[in-house]
Length: 324
Image 1 (cartoon, rainbow, N blue to C red):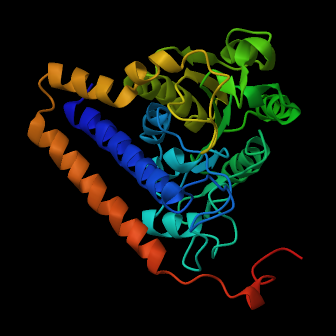
Image 2: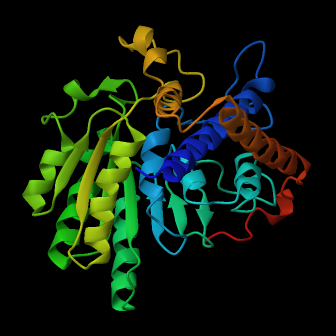
């Protein structure tokens, strides 16, 4: 793989992790001593994607901002990898007027027309909108594609199966991505899903299916490359499932008492694993790591400062900019 590409993938992963760590810090800063999910500058639920960076970095490296991405309720990694503005995303997470949705959506409802990015707090409901975008792209005669992302638990939802069926029937330019982090909230996949790989389900809809087992950003990149090439060539949809990792809780405040795998989680962190691999190839050294980390830190802290300085929406405008 081209050394510059591997460095770009690493830097994307570092930026995602740096952003998630900053949001983690800001989210908990004013929820002490007793955790109150409704308190603080960022009230409400918060779903962070630490550990799942390889999926977003590997997939989005093949996309342009003309392509569409529909993500899940855990959306920050895909938003960042797809080029969503960090300042406006942070402001939306803080519920401020300069946010992507003018502070009305919060972190589970990020919409950015500039990059054709969206996400949803409803399980598997990013799949149907991706079909609509893919159909529009095809009718316009472009080679643009849509990427629809969901979790392994959502692969049991009707919207998942209906979307795969229609995409295959109409040969739509869609890449379906399933992030298998082993846990559907607190339920292990073994207790909820009858197949060991959701990629096997692709055969039932006459499309290629591929599972990436090791949370490797390069393996994701290669699998996504095949699926994206197929979609752009007008050959129809593909399904990729990545066995990834949720380093932190389903949501912030989740005690994770249900997890039997917690002891080994930190040892599977994909960021130091990839850093070590690149160092071993001579592609990355101390200076390269420091530069990636410092560049990410500056961008993220600038975004956090922008969000904090932005005004809160005037309650009198609560019904503005929403569907009646």
